[in-house]
Length: 375
Image (cartoon, rainbow, N blue to C red; front, side, top):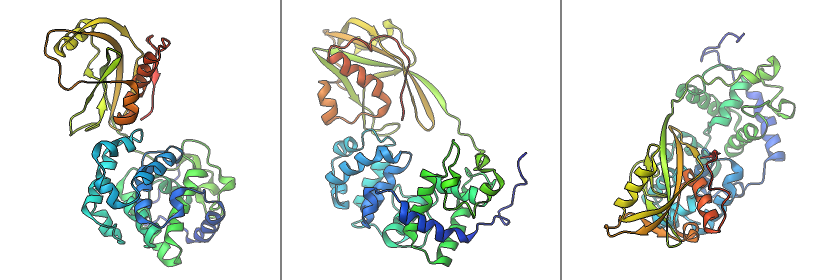
């Protein structure tokens, strides 16, 4: 049975956790490239990349991105095609587009929490992280990891999906940060580090290793597995799509998505709504100025966006030219060109692998087999 839920006024966040937290962080912090600098630009890049993405996956992207675009000015001047290629595989491409908008709007990132929040794509968490780590501004940075740690620390059953819970925890943490006069950057990173390495979600937290266990109410009461509380559920609609690998003279067709909307401005394999028949595929190919010599059914694949799930059915079609006018939007490329020059979102990774297998003469992926891929 769930304990009686405390009110916001009754929420008690013990301040005694700060010293053991900072001591633990100083001894156990992982050596990450963005922790070796106080450059606000590099810290900002890392924080944007780390949104919705695991640290292990971010490492190589960060190094490549900073290597190519080491300053705000370099980011501002980078051609969009190259920028999207640098981001390829990280997903949520609006993040990097907003980064470039910010880089084009300011010559340097402001050393002020409120001013940072006014910039494109910078919310409360990112503004607090950059301000605290780069400029030592005493402002708590509250992300999902921090919400989980603090909820358990004070035994809170407040819904962490509610914005007011995030604001409340931010206010209380900021108050403690100012009262204790701790290093703001170390404080925020330490809380995140505990959440990422010890106070884990969706598995048993490693309370025995936690520097906060003496102060932690959930540890004392044995309720860590029930906290944090997430009430709000996001509904996600499902779409079926037919993805086509159109092959002509050893090349495969891609096209550029519209400038606005989902995956804007990225490249994709031609795809159509619904689960199409071979006759409907023939019709699309004919309108594109070709005729099909052979159609091969490929693996099904799936991709989950935050608000949408694609269920994809794939076909490879070997083409011959017809007398009809060719579809201007189709670009026929060698497989190696995709890697070098065109940014394609991870939603099409399963079919990208099939294209590479077919180009290399492999046949093992041309059967209808369920494939599940990440974001």
